[in-house]
Amino acid sequence: MIELTDELRSALPEGADPFEWFLEGGGEVHRHVKNRLTYEVNLGDMHFYVKRHLGCGWGEVLKEWYRLRKPVVSARTEWEGAATLAAAGVRVPKVLGKGERGRYPHAIESFVVLDALEDCETLEHLKDGWMGTTGSRFVALKRALIHEVARMGRTMHGQGINHRDFYINHFLINRDLIRNWQPGQSIPLNLIDLHRVQHRPSVPHRWLLKDLASLLFSAMDVGMTSADYARYLRIYLGADWKQQLQANQKLWQGILKRACKLYHGFHGKAPELPRILQL
Image 1 (cartoon, rainbow, N blue to C red):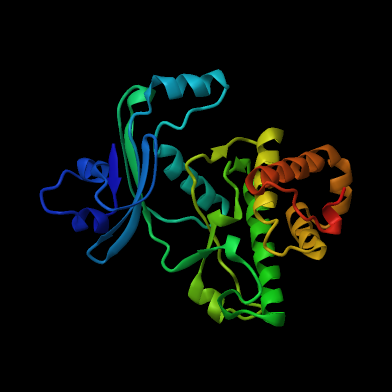
Image 2 (image 1 turned 135 degrees about the horizontal axis):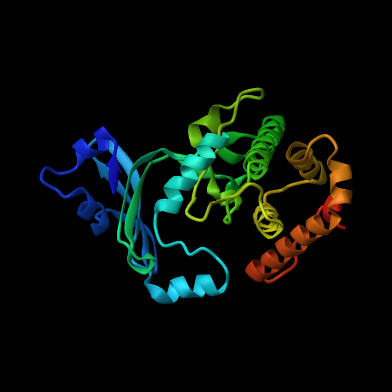
């Protein structure tokens, strides 16, 4: 199976086998882990990223089955995750092409082509002075970003979707938009790295905890105040957020505990928590 947009197909070298061309990985490599490769390509007027998966072997498949997990054996999870999130109302990179071949899970070869998000920054660099935003304008920008991150999380989790790598460095925003942004304007964020997205009627407790703990851990060093966390919770949980925190105290204590454990493992020290998180 292979599907390409007309523009992408016409941009490929004449006579090239599309499937083999994408499997060859002829671009700037950004990430190479085991059987997965992510590379960047400029081809004519097109700029895109390719995520290529080669056969992972029975060892990886059996290991995930033993853990009662569905193994990621194909780029299919990325393009299906993108379609699911887009349908739910979450902005993601546009899929320009996809391909998959192979009958058995240990030997599937596949790729997905994603439109490049030009001149973007991740939220992990959020701080006063970011892209020239300072003072009250920065405060307004941070509030708008918190609102959008919370809205996106509420939307996907409310529709049974979990990300599994839900860190702030997987939220991208255009740099020019930041530089020119004024209070009251919309602030579109794109969610990336979708190869582990899962979709069910509702998100199981363990995966909801993992998503929210990952998000909290990754936001611990961007200057979040108690008021910022309260703002996030008010959008994510709704107007009755305080009652929901009390009713689901075990979940939220687990989220904080896991986030602090991640922080200590990464930084070798405990995080400095604002008052609202000092449970």
